[in-house]
Image (cartoon, rainbow, N blue to C red; front, side, top):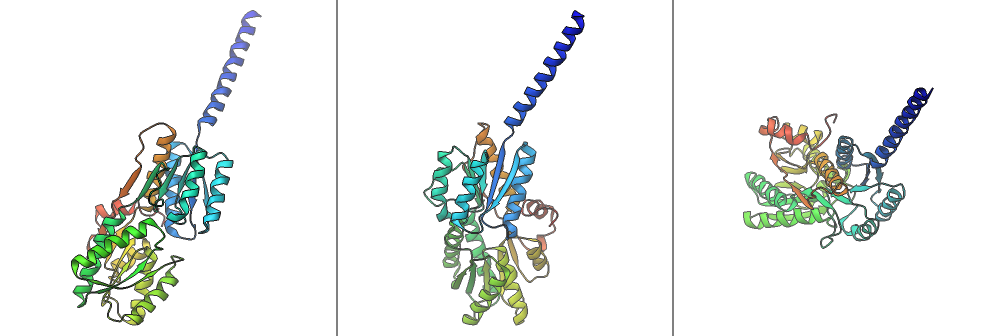
Length: 324
């Protein structure tokens, strides 16, 4: 009887230890929240894909919020995420200028935060990591490329379809591009800023730009939809190939346009990669591992003759999900 009792006690102890271990494991599992400025835009969906993918690899839970391009909604999302007990945040902010109050709040809550795609307002330091493209150097390289496209077509005037200039990445793109134009002998005839990042808006702006400046010989698209919209306008006007187009970001749509020679070059931005790397950095902060505060990812130029190379395919794998 005593042996049976001891056996039962040992079994009970084992079950209790297993239960405690399970509870402890559940408590150790971290949650990362992804705050997108808008999930209507493919780019931000792709960043979220990267966050979710890396979270799964790291054994983290994943939740997401959309700020609907509203700084107030963005702040509400951060508060909601913290109230729900998230351990870390990866964010594509609505704008760089919207970030100071957000950072102050998350600092008070001791929540690590990584930026993806768009960095914080210059001068802000209370963030864990900022994973963006090397926007200034890309701006210069893209500026030189579009200037060369214009000169190949017999002119030196270029137009630009720009991201909102209240974003630090857009400011860096523009600074680099202007330096390249000055150095290479091109003139920026007009720059129009997007508000909605839609193809329809880009079509309207490209039409307006070419109507006002018919001597433009190349268009600098600072975001993917700009390239798609500009290509549509050139096709309608019978100007495909006669006016050059270069675009930043990259998507299945602009890759198809590149292969059709409707666009001459894409500077690929690793949307999925930014989500992956941002998640890794906040996880490192939670586990006391090394954190890289500022990661500026290279945006390689790919032209039609290089699009099917292994090197280009490796880059594209970090731009958008395989299903797209």
